[in-house]
Amino acid sequence: MGMVVKLKEYFHQAGEISLFAWRFLTEFFRPPYEWKELLRQCYLIGNKSFGLVGATGFIMGIVLTLQTRPTLIEFGAESWMPSMVGIAIVREIGPVLTALICAGKIGSGIGAELASMKVTEQIDAMEVSGTNPFKYLVITRVLACTLMLPVLVVYSDLISLLGSAIVENIKGDVSFQLYFNNVFLYLNFGDLNPSILKSFFFGFAIGIVGCYKGYTSDKGTEGVGRTANAAVVISSMLVFVLDFIAVLITDIFYEL
Amino acid sequence: MKTGAVIDYKNPVIGIRNLWKSFGSNNVLQGFDLQLHSGENVAIMGKSGSGKSVLIKCIIGLLPIDDGELIVLGKSIPELNQHALDELRTDVGFQFQGSALYDSMTVRENLEFPLRRHREKLKNIAVDDLVKESLENVGLLHAIDMMPSELSGGMKKRIALARTLIMRPKIILYDEPTSGLDPVTGKEISMLINEIQERFQTAALIITHDLGCAKVASDRMVILHEGKNYAESTYDELSQSNDPPVKAFFT
Image (cartoon, rainbow over all chains, first blue to last red; front, side):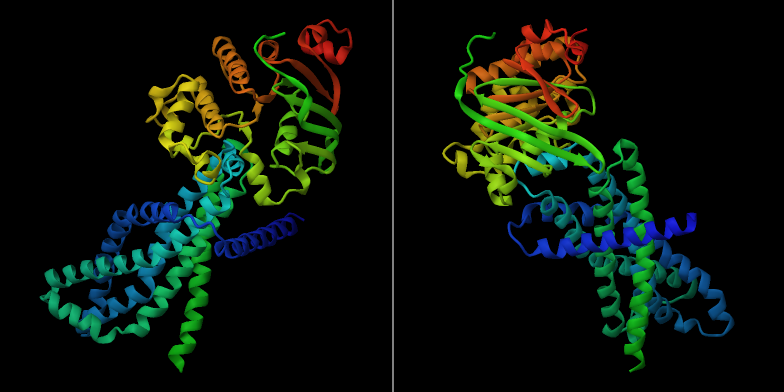
């Protein structure tokens, strides 16, 4: 019985989020447009995440290189190091890692902010003063996430590769120039495009889940914490599901 | 009876007849009637959960009504589209229970917010002048660059009132204006409500369960009991009543 109820709740929520995303798409094109607030959100979401995304990307690049080095040396293939790490980071680790970090930082932030605005009637106050709160709060945030995540991903990729290059430079006598030449020898736009494309979807998922959870929260102040938590859990899960779908699709194109 | 307020009994600004509203099986309003006249302050008292807040949220169009007649400033609320509703809301101020100041904005930005979409109504006056004038009206001009988190409870209520007043509304709906305040500050807010009524000739519905506020600020009182307009009269008359549901509020 408990299982059935849980399943029902799960599908109910999935449906609600889809409807919320649909509402986003229908209201997105209708004026008035909140340009100023959109720019402010891009600044808050993008700029304020640079430090965190950079730090995790840098560490990831270093760790990945340190971990794979011994195995590659054993096979006498250490010259493959840069291209291998480059492909791994650009195709998979950069986008997914950045998306997960952002789900934690941005998704929870949006969820908690909107939930507390809802609880303290600020969303109603906006409605009463003639500003459509869905446009002002939801559309700007979702759009800012969607636009900023690919930027953060490219930035994270670069920092990761830099970390990796530093390790190679210290441990393996590989100059920076040789390292990056090697990286780009095997890396082309066919690798970059799908990963940028899926970053847009990751950003959209993080924004829409955070906004949905916050905007529909109605459990008082104790609900604020739970909203932030649920936003992170659901959007992280969605990042993996979307990644899975994206890889399946790009795989078809590689086969062609 | 208060002096200074000019009430025009021939000119109703809110007319409610047989209003029904329920949430699931919970019938909150069950045929509520009320007339609010131009320049008049009416206090609505009722137990917690009796539907007072629901009533004023219906009036401002935040909640759809189930049945009945609801006319505000000559317009029937259920029949208005979004644009017309937004237009009407410039004439109806809403004072939220928890003040509902936007906590990511300064006091100045809070006051400017309603003007973003409704510049036509007051287009001849500079935004800065409107903000300062409105803050002066509530005696808090010095707080203009503060954040809501730096303000006390009473100051928040005043700023929220300034934000409502900036649109020069004809009707103000107060949701528990004195809740969460000490008696002295509560009294100050009640006096401020009167001052606004006299100075701007606004009509007001005051949702409250603070007897002091009802006594000071209202011209007429309504007891909301079991979803209906159970009794309405002046404070002095109702306080003499022997009817148990009415008497319960005064003892």
